[in-house]
Length: 441
Ligand code: PA5
Image (cartoon, rainbow, N blue to C red):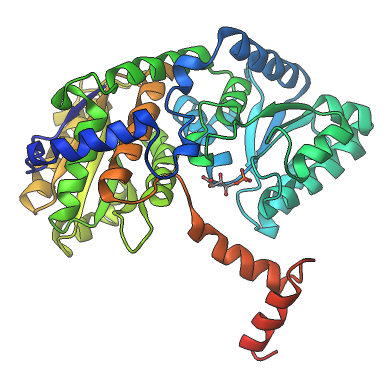
């Protein structure tokens, strides 16, 4: 993985000392939120036997299910989806020669039609569930799990369902832990000191990724390499996470309050979603923080391109570039050339895409949009593992440079409190009265 800030118009040198101080806080565990930095050495601490245990559980689901539904939201959802979508065939659900179950997602919304469609899809199918919730009480996840569990038990009986359900949750706390113990489900623990958005390299991400048929050992190996490449002992300008954290903070201080993570590879759409949560929840607090946005190019050049080129100059772009696609598609010559495309004959689609990427870089930087480039050689487990850890480490450093606690998310509770009050959840009686009065009911 390489980072290039030469098109970002920033001098990061003045931030070197601040970045070093932020890194020291992380390394020594002296910063705010230091009870949630278990992710820092997670890659190098994961044992082979633990990865084997995850793979064994994944195999049970793979052997017994044609579909596995992963129920979770936020940090209990996005990392697994990011990696699975990045590595899967783009039309995965239509593949007939499958080696792994189709992985579907639930618990990431409360859309009744979404759940009705899912239930209808699962009826009569051999399916399994991975239920993921650290707190074990998240409403979206719990509602979907209740529905899915009921269907599974109806189709397979209690015993059959038990074989096809795995829970990933806290070691002791929460309704999901209690339920799993009572029902006798196989469980994996989310470590206390790893927050949701930093948990993709725990069973939260690793189990679904293994079920989908991908090599979690290579994913972790990539992360281990990045753990070394971003260690405090690495000189500032050679440490990609330090450089990225510094560059985005310089840009923020120069009025660039929105960062758009861009890609020219549609398989990275959910990677961007994962990144948005990582940076949004970590930095958006105390009235501060870069707004993390995302665009898939070239698709969004035809929708957001105008704004980016000529709108308010408060944005910068961070492009995740894949140097070499895994597949090869060549544009053929056509005798009639009615579409006028023969000038591209013999070229790979990626050559056209790369020129779109270069053209966009030139146009956007000309238009006053600084660009940070993050490049991986190809889309595979190892490089995704690197990318994940690179962004996590940079996020921890960047949050401390910004002056916030990057590891809490107090703002997420506000909507939940209102929702529980409105739904008259036991324990929320006072809040219910207050919210009804506020709404004039
Ligand atoms: O990053 C976070 O902490 C959140 O996004 C959580 O992952 C999300 O709210 C889901 O929480 P839980 O895993 O407790 O169901």
